[in-house]
Length: 484
Image (cartoon, rainbow, N blue to C red; front, top):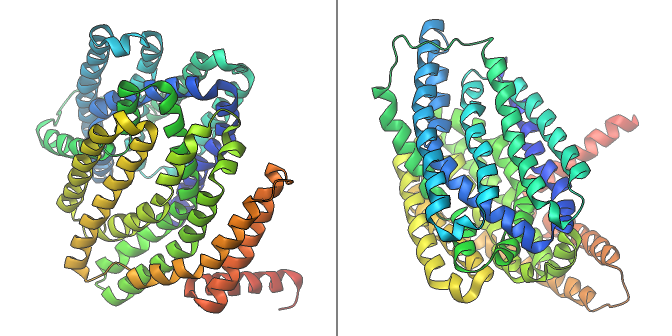
């Protein structure tokens, strides 16, 4: 399949990964309530750590090894079998470790039933073999299967999860989504590759399998670690507040993440061709696009955090407002990290630098959690996440400037922030009106923001990326209307 079609299917998959949660989260948050959604997220954060240890670096190493072996059928069979057996060993160890943890750690024993449900997800991740399909570049299959299974999961939740006491049913449906994906994948893979114990190749795989696994585990120490630690130190209710805030942030970041996915192949190609000036020009455009999207999103979301939380989650989630306001600047910070890491360091193949960034983030994240979470609870988790991402950004910026002399856009950021000061005053004034409905307030505020953004970006800041989008949109409208 051609690169263009692979990219199309990959883009559809990326969009679906954010679209389904956008449809599902409001219903689940309202139906289960903050305490029960906190239980589900706490249990899932524990399961995710065992998944990390069971999978280690296979999501990265597997794709690379399968892609290299795909030209030779016998070698493909051998590499596939070696990876499966290696991954089976770590998964068995992870399952045994989880069972021991449930019986010997009192804080986990209270959630024994749900953690055992989580074993379905743990084993399902092992049999998912997503790395195999990415390695053979069968993005069409991945996309169709994922969308179909997620649709089935969505329907099952709407049908089976009817009240707060159904939180175990919800988590079972969630775990079964992985199991169903795994069964379909294994059946389909049997038509492409053969399980063969001849010529197993473990030794060349073990080192990168462990190294990449350490990288992913370190990354998790300033992302998913927060929920697990918060659940141990505080309560599942606080986990519910924190995860609600982080889910709102994830939905907002998705707007820019889609752009990053589009840019990555192009950046790699330019570096491969040594077209450094064009590479830097695209980095500038990426920064302009990020500022155009992130600053107004942060302004709007910080001001209307209470209304957005109420709209997405309903009543009972007021405790998520402050954590949400703390993490919202991450829309810019992580967006800029994506420019530094995904668009710059990855194409440059600076794997050790990326590992160093993750180690710094992990140290800051864990230490800040220990220092602040017991006192500040979910807000402390949000601050820890914010500080760890800032540390990663500073580290990544240091190396990117070292290799490509690309500096942090202080001037552009300052000008964009100043440009939205009048908008902040206007939107804040809107919050003082008490005779408007929730939907009415958000709708009017969104319209004001969109009009303001268009005026500022086109007239004052003259954002090149925004101006190109507007001109192309006008051209398309003219063509469709028969004016051109």
